[in-house]
Amino acid sequence: MGKTIIDKIWEKHVVASINDGPDVLYIDKNFVHEVTSPQAFAGLEKRKIKVFRPERTIATADHNVPTKNQHLPIKEEQSRLQVEKLTENCKKFGVNLFGLLHPFQGIVHVIGPELGFTQPGMTIVCGDSHTSTHGAFGAIAFGVGTSEVEEVLATQCLLQTKPKSMKIQIDGKPGKGVTSKDIILYVISKLTTGGGSGYFVEFTGSAIKELSMEARMTICNMGIEMGAKGSLIAPDETTFEYVKNRKFAPKGKKLEKAIEYWKTLKSDDDAVFDKEYFFDAADIEPMITFGTNPGMAIKINEPIPFADKNSDKTSFEKALEYMGFKEGEKLIGKKINYVFIGSCTNGRIEDIRIAAAFIKGKKKADNVRAMVVPGSMQVLKQAKEEGLDKIFTDAGIDFREPGCSACLAMNEDKVPAGEYCVATSNRNFEGRQGPGARTILASPLTAAAVAIKGEITDVREGIS
Image (cartoon, rainbow, N blue to C red; front, side, top):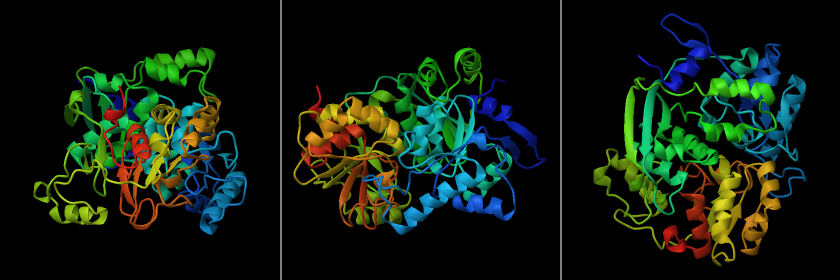
């Protein structure tokens, strides 16, 4: 019987197996940020343990950082303390830090790939659930808890039970106005936020293979939103071309040898998955969410479904009450005052370009407060070189400095209570963008259209 790509990478990294227990899994790359690392470093200090292999850990500040005036001290005390503590810990333990104002600073799941740290065949962890992003390169990547961050810092290994395997195959050609964000929101709406629980997912099929690397990262980033341990896409020529010439990627003969190995990282034709799903890309349209989890998503012209079609009627009704929506209601034409384009899901240069291409030459609606937040200093630099920042500012849209920003309320970029925000981020939980804020998830293309029109709109009406 053949092996899945998940089997191949996992088995290569097993240091030892415990009888009737988990595997000791070697971790190739460990990313840390200011939120989940302080307790881990404190644990090492308490036990007088050094970071075992500091060269395999990369740190950056992203969650708590302001996206304006980053050269000034951080105003929020808790945020400032966390960023300062990360700086102190990295210096103390010899960990490479890309802190504020560093040319490589940015959201942890944006800088790893763009700098070439993320490579096929790796095992990658971070104290952050959206570590699954790195799986787009054909890597086993997943989020871990603070105690596990400490475990990896101390040993470069983790005790892990191998998850079950799932294949999600999407074939065909997506329609007009459909992006990778719409594809993954569609899949989650079909499988629910618990559909991937206990599984590691491989996304495959002709529709996936046609995606750019940045679009693949969006797919894998949100694989976690259906409850999966992680998700990945087998590497191919698109992957290899992306990795080439990255700052910290292999060069010359080392790269050639690496690519030889990377080409073996695909599921065998006779590999057996524990579960399989098949979708037709032609069925997918621009998507938006209407509730308080990413699985509560609909095609943009569809009405909100009725509670009696849902297994958990109480939580469904509670979500609609929080959002101020009704069963059977269509959201087209709903007035929106806030738009956020950014995050580890859609804060890459390709996302910025997509939004800028739609907005170019237009003005935002008077009622809208919109911000575009690059995912890293490298994205910021590239956007400015291409004149994308001017497109946004000319339209009356705020173009900011890198950070997680309004994806979550851990910094200054919060959405006021009761207001709706169309966001390109990954979660729409209650209060995710601020106490009482109401989040509607969408693609950068749809978010750009909302910013211009001031209401939820079908982006296909604005593109040829």
